[in-house]
Image (cartoon, rainbow, N blue to C red; front, side):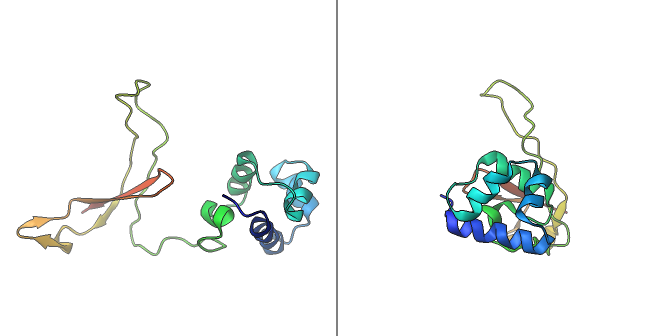
Length: 139
């Protein structure tokens, strides 16, 4: 659950970072000016539509930072040399039993990185509690 006061503080950081007034910010993300005022005062919780507009408009804003205050702002590129690219939203089938996300990955791990009794790592998948995931494949 989003804490209204902490969310308002993060919006204020955005305004300061981009040197925007609340009015300019509202105009940039195409929302009513009053909704920014209500969010900043802690009166209202942000809608999903509002959050998506902010993240899409401002590339430096990380979704998890905006919602939970976890992570950093402005968002930094992954320090990994080859990060995986995941496109998990388009589904190949409309049949729920056959639905599989399309995943594109880039090599990340060297095959010789780790082995146990002649076995080596082929890929690593990290699942997050929001249902998203990242897949890393060995080169």
